Amino acid sequence: MNLHTVAGATDPFLRPSLPLADRARRQLWNVVALLLFRPSPRPAHAWRAFLLRLFGAQLGSDCRIYPRAEIWAPWNLRCADIVAIGDGAVIYNPQPVSIGSHAVISQQAYLCGASHDCSDPSFPMISAQIEIGPSAWICARATVQMGVRVGAGAVLALGAVAAGDLEPWTIYGGVPAKRLKPRILSA
Image (cartoon, rainbow, N blue to C red; front, top):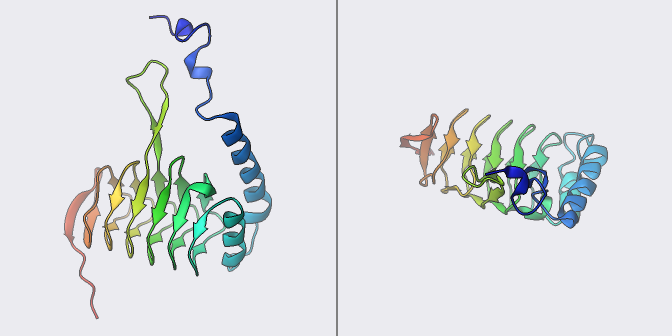
């Protein structure tokens, strides 16, 4: 099969994954993020929340989103009250990402809401929602893949990769993440 003839004379690899309006909105957000979000002082959480809300994010009260966090599409971000997203965390969210109250997304964690269909010759982007439950903790450099639901109070350990749903109040680690033990809160 000649890839240059799939769907006419246009090479499918050259087709954009998203419509022009979405790409334009993302570019505007990128400019605002570069000029106003990233250089903001570390304690200016309310300012960054204001900017994210301007672009459609639904944020509860007292969210702590740090200046070097990368939010791909603010209009697809939903955070309950008292959520923390650390410096260097990446929220790649072509589909909605929901984060429950008191959840923590640590430094350099990666919530990856999209991939590509490698079985299709045109290699189209595919995406799915991610849900992080209340009181869950995605540790530094951990990755949550598209379509995953992280249960309330679950912990995804340092550098672990969640390819499937995580049960509530359970600690997971490894690649792919496996159940290590229950999460038991003291006092």
